[in-house]
Length: 115
Length: 110
Image (cartoon, rainbow over all chains, first blue to last red; front, side):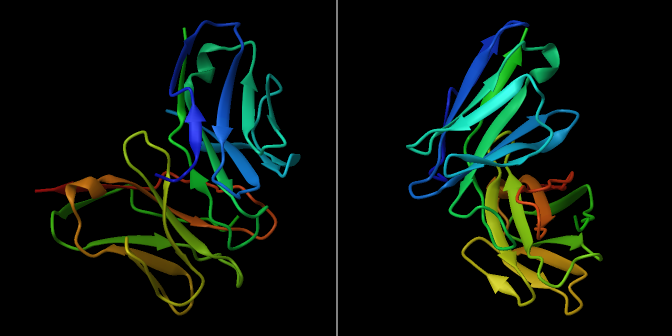
């Protein structure tokens, strides 16, 4: 158990809908990262927040957005869902904002299926 | 990013040591080598990391060559539960995200 929690574990929805994925980092960690893992793309970085502020962006679509709240939990919002958004979504947390020697700990993921 | 090259798959007998190689010939002086693994569709699990010295923890050992161009992750006594995809990642200076390649699928059999 990494100490990172994600809800829900599974999500089934229809195209065009909007969903919210939630992540609670390990106690004391300030950074939250979101990653997407699809069958054809592998694990890809989406976005990072550090202590409530956006720190870095990866291959995140404009239909996707995220935020980190004062209690440091984070939410990833996915809207206008398409079939291709079906994937595993992981969040990871760390006690740093990046750098050479930063260890990220991953949650169990949310499996999203768009029908 | 320093690119890494790993064999796509490896097999190991249960109880034997699993030695997973990784090439990172373009690694820079301050970049660390990290290893993660992903069991089935679970979240990636941190294993170990190092800079230039060999490292050991309760999960594995990491051997980095003197020129730092390659490394080997060693699982001393592989079990069936070690069957997973193993990712070798080099942390870069400016970026903060982990860049995952395709990794090595390790299959441990009895």
